[in-house]
Image 1 (spheres, rainbow, N blue to C red):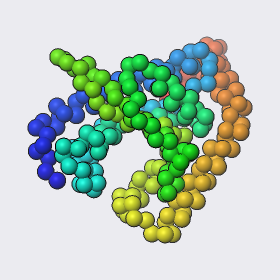
Image 2: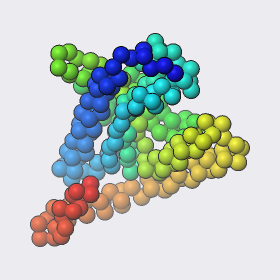
Image 3: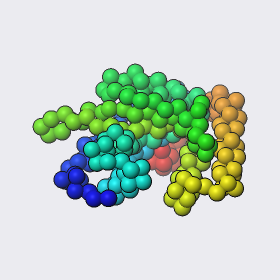
Image 4: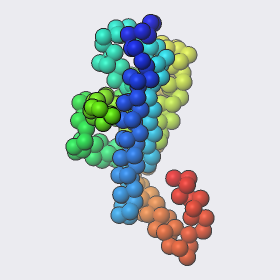
Length: 225
């Protein structure tokens, strides 16, 4: 697909890159606030990325999206991924995001309660985020994905397979993906059953390492977070 409908791709993608960096910082600060208050944080860690020009064009060609429909058809030019320990944490994070006043939630897709036929589970939110540029404010669309570590493991494998099969999986692969998805979800459910014990153990560990008398290799521990 021709890319000349965007005059300067670096300039076009710049506000998306800024939005991702700002959102990552804000979400990490939420996690820090929970930990400072010695509360279980629903956010395990946060990652983000901006699609490359090549990736945007590839998706447009695959889905037959016309250039004038790009901003509607490609809603994940900027993407934020939030990892959680428990399924319950996902919905707590979603509520935190809904209550924010610094951006607007446009769309919610709950693929946990209504998973895709392939077995894909995740919680998606499409937000409109205002970016303060040098001379103006430019609003961009950002897709936020919230999932557990088990969901993310499955999604990573499925994403790799999708490059090979382009979504047209042989039946035996599709059946295995579905079984693996159910196994991952069962793992999440089992972890939810003992989440209070896990939370107490995590809080004990974190508080212990805040004590300078027991903070052996504390610096290394914090860096690894």
